Length: 385
Ligand SMILES: [Zn+2]
Image (cartoon, rainbow, N blue to C red; front, side, top):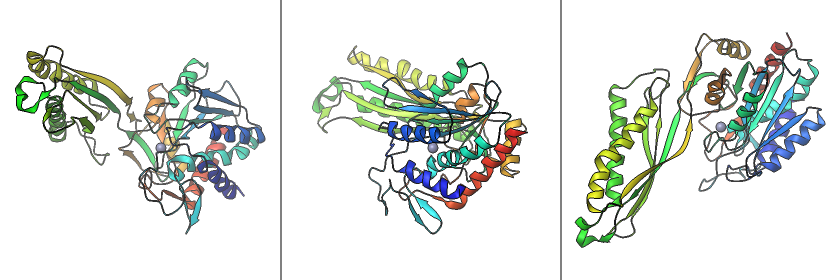
């Protein structure tokens, strides 16, 4: 009954194309109508444009610290991916349910929504909250509105479970992230007169090499956390755009870079090192040729890392509810770092595998949905005592 309901809800959720660039309001309306049917009050927390919204709902008593179940409603694009099934239609094959978002993370959302009638019937002593956000995949944007609302409230929730796919393993840490868009403004001229121009692509390249050097230094001698696959802070330069022809000195080049720091590393200091190289080393050379030449750094995205102490109450609780003894850390970022930074202890635990996330033919195993439902039943019981 509950398993069937979970799959039906998942089928409905994946039917909405909530790629982050789209509005998620049709999906939000579906969730609101469902919560109305099961008698749970809900609240919309919209973005400034009004085309995207988080859904916040509380089951159980108000005014008592409870537990947040946090999921996101947006998904990554299917552009350029080769799917064997329609990514926006749930397809079952050999105990696996295929669709965009099945694992990341409408599967968790569906488990939570399907559990609501049982949670309502359980007469909780402490509330369970649903926080379903927008724009997680583009930098954990939407959930910040939920957290701002919680910070205005009188009672701070006691715990938060973020249901990103961990195969129901208890994830106590993840790295943070800080990214920038860099624009190098040079001076154009005919390539035969190259020294008269300021080659924006070349100065961008020197900055990119500097970022790589910092990354190499961190890999060689930076802080270590063996619970991560890559046990040190990383640096990466992504998209680069610049130039129009081999015989024109380019006057413009843009690129994006990021750091993914361990909690112990000072990411501000790393960013400052890159900016200082641009300001003190490159700009004086550029401006000797053209005083208007310059480099600008524009913050793009950032989220804090998560570092829940292994001996903390939230980690113990997650292990008890999931029936697990071990914990791990993951490379990808989640909303958990933001909840933890606002003083709400958080861990990541959810159904499905990150191996399937963001790929063509994304799927979640039915057994994973069942394991998540069992976890939610344990949480419900725990919230009654
Ligand atoms: Zn996700």
